[in-house]
Length: 479
Image (cartoon, rainbow, N blue to C red; front, top):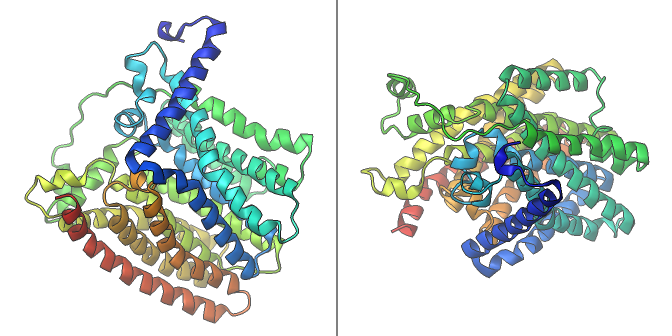
């Protein structure tokens, strides 16, 4: 520990507590200042969306147990995304959060180490997102689950274990990043070892997750289920090695080579691809994100099949969730510039959005197809083909909706309650029929495939139309 953080032991807890309180206050003030009093309605919207989603799934024949399994998987993935504070690399604290979350960037000016700030920041995120998302989600789940015969205790247990799943996701992302700052080969070895353990059946992923405690509450399952989450949440900040700045890097002719290869006339797509490639984590973070989403989807479909008499379509389910998960890639391709920046250039915002779309598709589609093609090991070519059709079409829709609704600031504006409602409703309009089609595959496979292809095609057409209108819309708003 550096001298800057060498407070006496009895004062260390006090310092961390004060930092935690101020970070929570800072986060709330930031969101409230950006979006006004309507931000307070955000948890209510989350509860309503959760209740509506659970109700629709149960109406479609999904058991409440399968819904609970799905919520754990989705929350784990959400935690992975929040944990990408570390995944995007050592420069993330400066580039992504430096201007926004000031306290976490204050190691230069305050006698506090990066590790302490990052550790407190992780705890803050666990508490903040638990209150903002997980409590409302549990309330929405309870509205349906209690009427289905679930006890209040089981609902409270679901909130506890989904909070643990969120911590597991955050800790996993942060630990992988921390190890990656020391050895990228070690990260690859860890990921391959865990994947091999799960695929060969030697590692029971459910037992070593909070969901295992949800299924069978006991002292043993509590230790097994919450132990990895606690260990990873502690290990991540300890392993993390942020840097103040890196040396200058240059790659002569790379811009021209990439621009020529993708035939990028205005250069926006080339610039975006190079920015993502030069950021910490490079383009590999897109592949990692898609891989995690693919794995979570496969586990969810398997749990649904095991908990019910249904045999959902892997192709439709994987294609749908990979397409929806491409939202993360949209965040990365808009991470390094602003719409206002393009207003100062002899370039229209329509051209800028077109370039972003090219970069978005160039990054997300190959990454998702890698996993779909890999699934040929245990899936039929027909299932993989269905997924390969649904996934890119849904991704085009996600780009159009996100560009039209949020512009170049998807992460900030999605905390704006009205925009969150619009964005959520737009995604649900496509996700719900596709999920129902995946579940209905058991009874009518041909019809389910036809409906999924039709819905995806219409969605892609809408996405293209929205992305074409995004430029003029934001040009007017930013004048």
